[in-house]
Length: 215
Image (tube, rainbow, N blue to C red):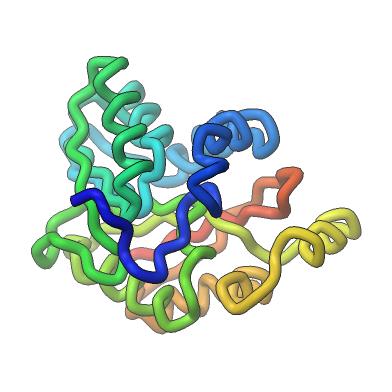
C-alpha cells in the first residue's frame, strides 16, 4: 500500500518537512532524554510483546531493542512514507522489527495481543472522537494486567510555554491535550488505573507522560 489514508495528518505535518523530522526531534525536543524516560516508565521486560502506536521513524523501537533485545516489538503507523524511513533505519542497524501500516482507530491485531502499548507524539494528531476510538483499540489489544504508556503534548507549565501554545498549537486536535484531559480520556476508554507521571519541557511545548493499566 502506497497511498495515505483520507484525513491522515503526517508526523511532520507535511511531506515537505519529513526529512527534517528526526533532526527537529533530536535537537529541539531533547529527544534522547524524552525516549529514555518514556521507556523507563514503560518498564518493558524480556520476552514481552510490545506495540508502538504511531511508531514514526522507529526511534523509540530501536532504543527499546538496544535495551531489551528479546522483546517482540511491532511498529504501526498510518503513513507509508514514514514507515519506509523506519524500515530503512532498522535495516541499517540490523534490527528485526515488524512494521504494519494501519490507523490507530482500526488496529489489525487480535484481542489481548500485547503486554505493552506505547505511543509518543501521535495522539495530538487525532480529533476527540478519534482519540477515544484509538484508546479503546489500545485497550482491546492489551492482555489482562497489561499497560499503555503515552507521551504527548499537555498543558503549558510556564509563561513561555503558554505563549508558544498560541503560536504553534491550535484547533480541535490539540484541545484535549492542552486542557489536560488525556488521563480522563484513558479512563473513559476503560483503563482501570491511570496516572500522570511527569512532564518533559521542549521548545515546542510541554509533553506529559501518562500511563494506564488494565484490571
